Amino acid sequence: MINFFTETEFIINEDEFNSWLLSVIASEGKNLGEINYIFCDDAYLLSINQQYLDHDTYTDIISFDTSEGNDLSGDIFISVERIQENAQQFNVSVDDELKRVLVHGILHFCGYKDKTDDEAKLMREKEDEKLKMFHVEQ
Image (cartoon, rainbow, N blue to C red; front, side, top):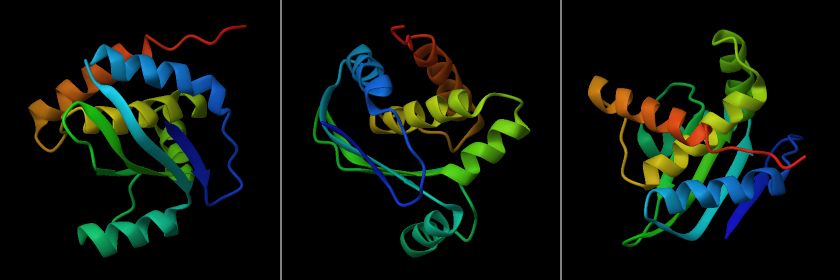
């Protein structure tokens, strides 16, 4: 099950993203356990970053992986403010940046990292691959 929660006034169309995220998970040969997306502001995510990761920086996403075997589970915290700012910085729509961050968390649960240059390059390639899978039924 994929759950969406918000600590802000941010509204997400859950149906729009559910089937895509399920397809992403299946494309990696994984199964869905329980994934919780929590949308919050910068201050909320900074507090989590300081408390649990001992980092004193703003970030767009923090994921806590509780997956077991091929069953993906965990909590993915996303700063709505960072998404909006990153969209401006990278000259993309907020919707496109949201998709990238949503799939980024899933890819972390699939085992992809982004600490080294090579890992980050592969992560970006996987993000691009999974973004091409997104189709909204009109």
